[in-house]
Length: 253
Image (cartoon, rainbow, N blue to C red):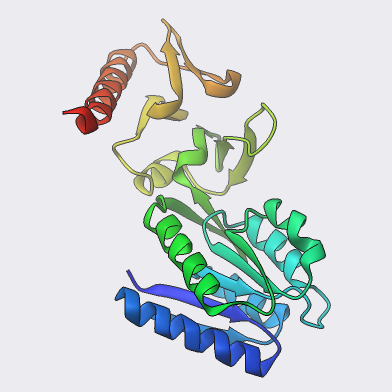
């Protein structure tokens, strides 16, 4: 994997030192990396909105612009759950807010070289476990949605509604996209999703029970299952969970 990394730091000396340590770490780990420097949140945000393809972000908080690093992290998390964020800052009072944006770590300047390298190792482990995601574009905006958060999809005439597992609370979050269900299904992993009705697509891991005319999902969701699809859904449900049980048993063999 080519690790696409960004350093957001307005102090040239510190930015140069972080680049040096990143290059050293990537060579020692045999990890190919591309490193891009930004001296403001606005500059990074512009590039990120165009591509949304960074894997790792080393982020200062006080960069002297209209938005600070914590606000930048919040904006990133509105659309991207996967980029690994490491704060490197002289403002320890922001540490508690790092949990809100699911930062991998919060390093307070001056940063010890060994500490940064250890945190980078942790970030690499997170990236190695990174899941598949669905990239959706609409106009000038784009979202990266982890596939594992998609509970089910409902089709309408010219749009589809994605019901996502909530990050907090008990009700699924709905996000509407201008795409037909067939096109959306083509972009999702075939192994995990199944069409239970002409207007519904469900994610097998979240099915709790299959009734005569309904599929019962986690988070209290219920969707219809058509008569012609029920047997197929039931078979896929049993095969999925049988395979999962066999996989879970492997470490004990």
